[in-house]
Length: 100
Image (tube, rainbow, N blue to C red; front, top):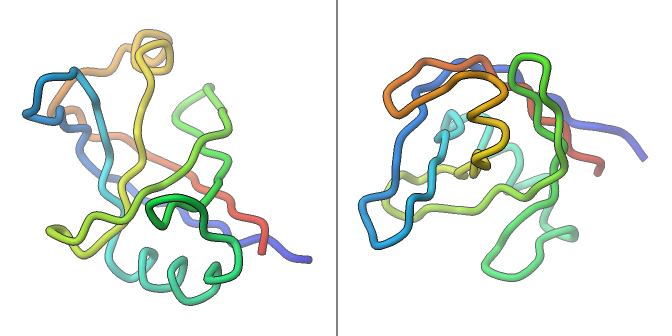
């Protein structure tokens, strides 16, 4: 078993629905690789389990496919945003690791 690692920079954005969910959109090239290489690992709603890292914070979560963006979305929890002093519109450096 090996790991897929992706490092990228993207803007943190807030979902415009009823809840205060915050996300980072993965690059399309990384999303295509994840979709292709993790087909046997996908869970509900096409999600894929990952280990994410922003700054000094690392956590286990899932990325979710977004058909509008044609890419996966990484949810960024409140405690991570507070620890890393992040808000909507901030540019963040992200590392995603997936075991395949």
